[in-house]
Length: 232
Image (cartoon, rainbow, N blue to C red; front, side, top):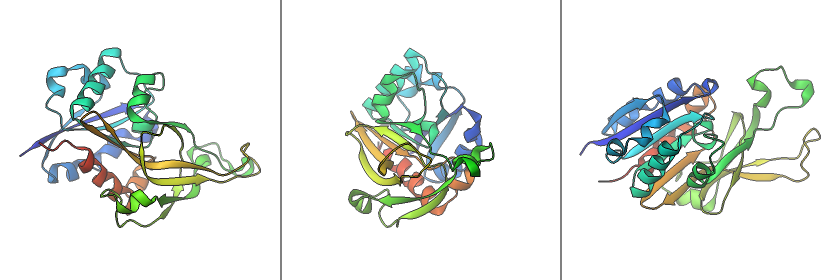
C-alpha cells in the first residue's frame, strides 16, 4: 500500500533545504512513499490534506509558523502522522513557538566555536571534531542498532531538551579555555518521541549535504524516517 510523505522545506537557506531533502527523495520513493514537496509550513493548516499524510519530513530552519499551521501540525502528529528531520530543519524551527518546542522535545541552543585565533569569519568557525556516541537504548533500537560510535567534523549541536524524549545517541561538549562552561556537557544527538498516536524522530547532525552523505548519518536518518512513518 502506498503511503504519503510530505516534505516541507524552507526557512534559512544556509542549511540548503532543497539539496538536503533532495538526497532522501529517491529513498522515500523506493520505500513506497508518494512524495509531495511544499516550500511553506502553512500547508499544515490544511486539515483535509494532512489527514492523509503518513510522514512529514521537515527541513525549515528558524522562520515562523502561523497559529493554524502549528495547530494543524500538532493535530496531525497526535493522530498518527510521523514527523522526522535533522539539524536545524527540525531542532531549530519556529523559535518563537513554545508549542512547537513542546511537540519536538528539544531545541537548538548553540554550536560552540573554535578558538578565536582559528576563526575565519565563515561557517567553518563552528566546525569541530566530535563524537556521536550510542546510548544503551540506541544500541538496541531499530534506528541505530549496529551503528558504532562515529566522529564528525561539523557543527556540534548543544540542545535544550525535556525528559520525554528517548535518547539514542549523545555528543559531549568538552571544556575549553575559550568557552565559559566549567564541566563537560552531554547533549542528545539522536532522539525519538511518542506524541499521541504519532512518532517523532530527530537527528542533530546534518548541517550540510556532505554530512548527510556520511554513511552513519544517512543510515540513521533513513531508518528514523521509516520508524516515524505511520503504518496503515
